[in-house]
Image 1 (cartoon, rainbow, N blue to C red):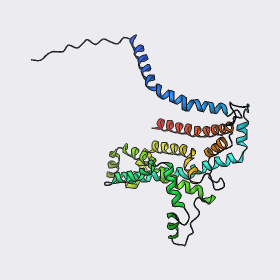
Image 2 (cartoon, helix red, strand yellow):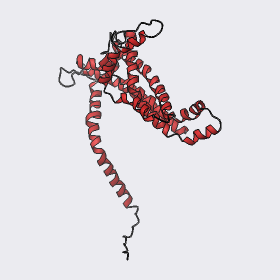
Image 3 (cartoon, rainbow, N blue to C red):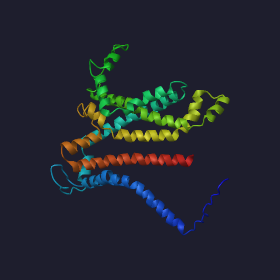
Length: 313
């Protein structure tokens, strides 16, 4: 014998109750976001705003307050200082050296790993494992590899045909930045590799099966199907890589200290030197704002490219 359950009659939602429900949802959403907003304001927005204000003053770490008003003097000094342009060029040069291989090699390795039938997990682990290492560990490993007479790289170069002489990897101004870029490619390629693997999983397998029936070779499948459908992933990878490279600091600071003869000092280390060694935090704030504007322009270009791709698709 069953028991019948009587459900309460559903009442129709009147237009008067809809705004009230939306208000409750808005308050609930703000409640969930409140902890993040508090931390965001305290540790990101607040210091950034204070740094922007400080860039217009001759603020110093050895004096209290903002000191005297400098107007745009700190910005004018930055744009007329050769050390600033040199550090900015080192940052751009590092970006040029690292971005193309980190995009192209990550795509190639992801394509190879995606086509494997067995052992795919092993290659995913091999490529991503260096990315989880701290920068200090990576610097220690590669400084040892680059060490003259003791490092493995010199031994490998000596075994090449032609009796090639190994360069002084971190001690030669012409090779120091290239050596740091090589270290960075080995260290961070796993992140882009994972992004490309995720993009490959979103491509319908039916397209490959249909193209194979039509006689398309694997190379044509890659050039006509895979690469075009990975367009948004490639845009994301490229822009994230450019932004990450423009913020280069830790591996250069640990491996070369900006040397030899400031040949590898990037913009952030220049900001650190003038702010915490020369105690000129007002001038350092102005240089920080210039670098922030550069990164902001790159981010806006990425948003423009994404919106353009969305309109085309």
